[in-house]
Image 1 (cartoon, rainbow, N blue to C red):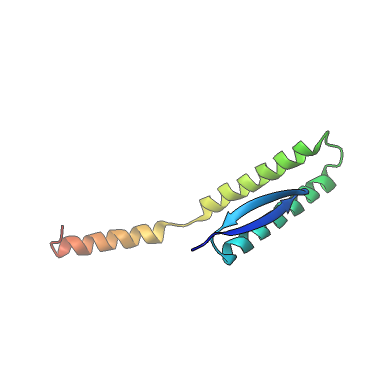
Image 2 (image 1 turned 90 degrees about the horizontal axis):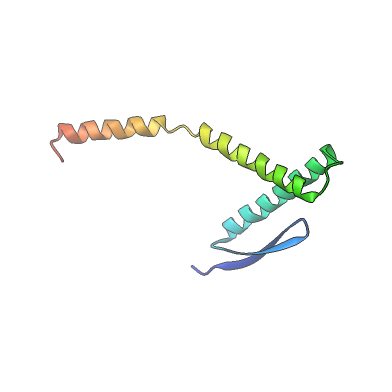
Length: 96
């Protein structure tokens, strides 16, 4: 599949990207909007920081914390149990 060339903008910085589908484009555009909103909320909450870098780093940290929390919420136990059940069945059939 051909790559799509898109541009998203965060903090007046155009970012040229290549994506593989319109669905992926939508994800990137939504992510860029989320970052922009997060930076603005930080500016509103902490108006006296020395420069923009603080807002960018705080936004990155908040995003990374959310990613870590989300990865911790992924429950793989049902899949592990399913794999064990399949392994037991394979063993009972004598398949190696």
